Image (tube, rainbow, N blue to C red; front, side, top):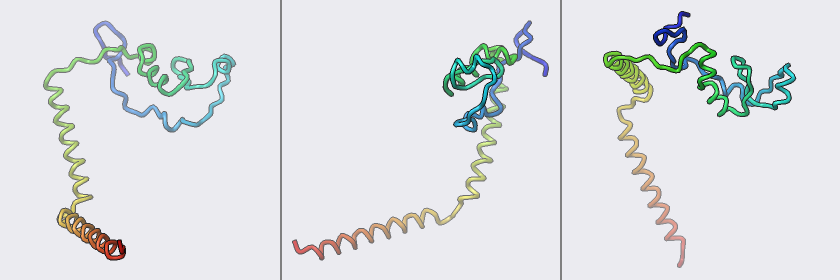
Length: 142
């Protein structure tokens, strides 16, 4: 893919990650590393791009988002400047997407009498509590 980045640079602008890092799926798994140096360093998360080992998932995430790792992937650490119209279009598309998601949720959970049912349930529970209080007062001789 052609790098379209800052003027005079062969590196691409920094982009949002489109896929998951898969930290959850790799948790609790052991991988055998054939490099003897890695055995001496210990255990942790291995970055194949940078050929380094970090001790925990938080450090790995910091490494993946860091300058050295991003440069090895061919990204500059600059983001592309966009105009107001581009931002408006993005907000409009997010708004449409949210409305579509809300419509799906409304269709799945729509019940016209939900409020009436809820109020009836509350009233029934209150009556039951009063009955139990009356029973406990009658049974107790003191």
